[in-house]
Image 1 (cartoon, helix red, strand yellow):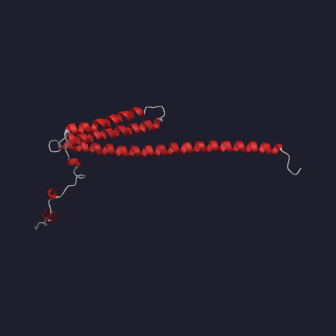
Image 2 (cartoon, one colour):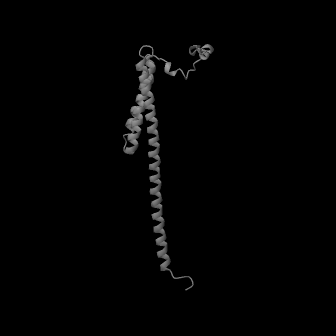
Image 3 (cartoon, helix red, strand yellow):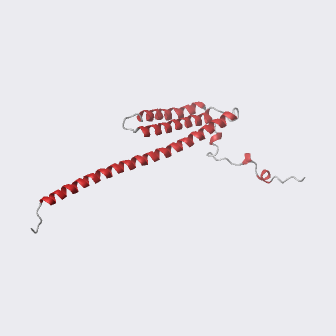
Length: 159
């Protein structure tokens, strides 16, 4: 039997391809202390925002959605830093792939929660507009009734 020619292997090897910095992010291994320096301020900002969401002025539905988003962002950040700073792909490839899968799943959930937050914000705005419209209609009706009562008391101009 005749073997098919190895067209792609003879042209260029995968190892010889230039890899841009953006494509090699998953292959980057940064020192653990650098990862900790990156993570610490971001986690402190997350804790600050979590506490800020506890204010009475934040609606409970928004508080729940945004806290879920914050939790997913924190998990994604910690998993990303673990994959780039602590887990070596050559030593523990299964753990490395698993952590990147966790990053992808949490980012997907984060995007879904952003869509839910946008939908809830639109619904809350629509309810606010509806309430203002009803209030304006009631005020207009009351003004028209008052105006009608004043007209009924007056004598016609030609009488």
